[in-house]
Image 1 (cartoon, rainbow, N blue to C red):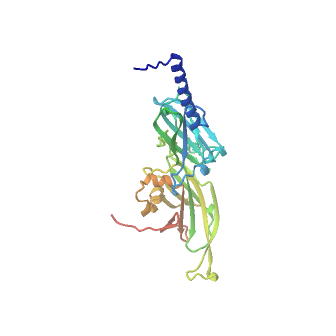
Image 2 (cartoon, one colour):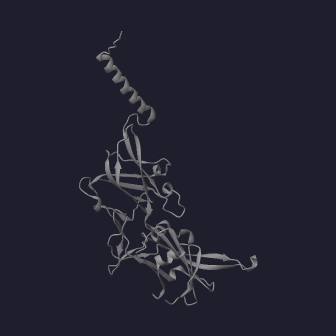
Image 3 (cartoon, one colour):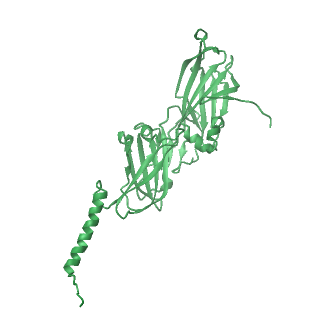
Length: 347
């Protein structure tokens, strides 16, 4: 004999409601901080494009602005954050956008106020990706030549292109990583007499010329006028040198003249020139800065591209030795603690 079991319509409805309740409860259990099954899209910034290969975002970045563009390249929204919140280990930026295809562009700075860069005013649904640029502020001398004689705001750039953001079945968060590249470099120049006699920093002028003050949304350089970066500080110092036998009674002090300049991003395919002139306006030295910086790229960095090496180096220290007539003895130079002996070769 067969037994037929009938389930009423009310029981079926009750079972469906019970199953929905279980699913909702599971979301609440897994994502207690959100309390629902919503997908949250967030950005995690890092800055490990440095010679330590370690994330230094929290220590170096004081403000960040993120531009969000849709799949058609139109601006959707602009988000900004600054202050101590950026130094928190678990800091992420909430995007507050719907699933879709996006390009995210970040410009970040190392100071909270007083930027030395200008960005265009961008309006959602009006401006597009190619409207987003970054231009270095500059002044002009009597001959209408552009120059910069101040320390530049530390500038960082990052981009995530054509990112597909999809809603997660059970909700939660999707983290989009954006790695930053530093676009400013400190160049410290030290002059020293071979004889050890005193030297005065203000007896010289120090400049770097380059056309690198206008950047596109993807951090490539746009056409720009030639900029002259001038030293924003000069000073003198002394260093103690021991004799070869290491005895204290034969130690001597050496006088050095120091100048600091800050330049925009050094590019492997550009030709910035560092020039030093004496008080008479005569050229003491003039060198291609990128070529000399790459002289000490070294064996352990040989697998890096030249551009990656330039981007990872935040500071360049160059020591030049002068003779009694304040002329560079161009057989030797110290670059970032590397003593380079220069030799003329015939091709």
